[in-house]
Amino acid sequence: MTLYFTFCATLKAETFLVALAGAEWTVAWIIDLTADVAAAGFLVLIVGMTVARLPPLGTAQGIEPRISALIGCFATATLIAVPRIQAAPQIEFVADLTTIVGFALCILCLGWLGRSFSITAQARRLVTAGPYQIVRHPLYVCEAIVLLGILLGNATWATVAICAIALAFQYRRLVNEERVLRAVFPEYNAYGQTTPMLIPSLSSLYWWQ
Image 1 (cartoon, rainbow, N blue to C red):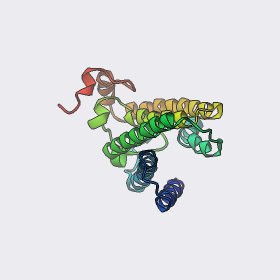
Image 2: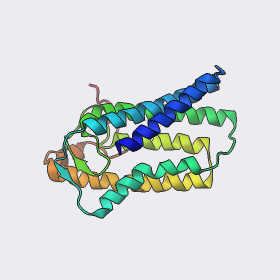
Image 3: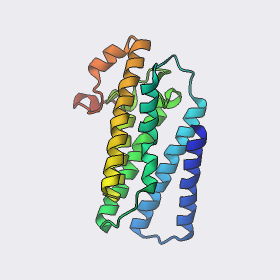
Image 4: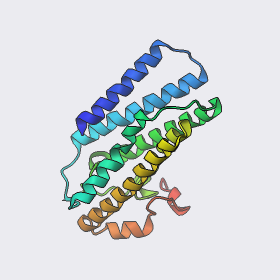
């Protein structure tokens, strides 16, 4: 897992260096480069959290949670094989901005999650502060925003299918995570009653107060 994300981060870093070598310094180029930097930052943070994560206190049993976690996490890697279509400059601009926002929010959520990060459905430490006070699974929401940006930038049926598969298995992944968290942390039931799963309520948006 660590090698995979390190490899992906290296590829992103290489893309960044190649882009710098052919710098155009237009607004569109800067936005596109920022999207690559945000993606690389997220991947580097995943590597760090994977290496430093706490030992699990509970793990989902059976093969389905593992399959769902792996497909949900790695399905989007197949997007690299999807031929790109030329989108209008305005669409590409919005797609890049969406991707940047999504990755920036992913970094924020991962920073709060810290050493509790897991790929498979495991319970390490209960995190209920920061963005986790808005919804119970903010990282999944932010990853969906990234997928939206990818879809806008390459709106093909293959991209739609891969993103739909990834989201479906990500949902199964969070359901399995909830089952483990409820079993390990008795206080999770109270947390679940006051905090939405994915869609924030008006009251939950004031988490900083």
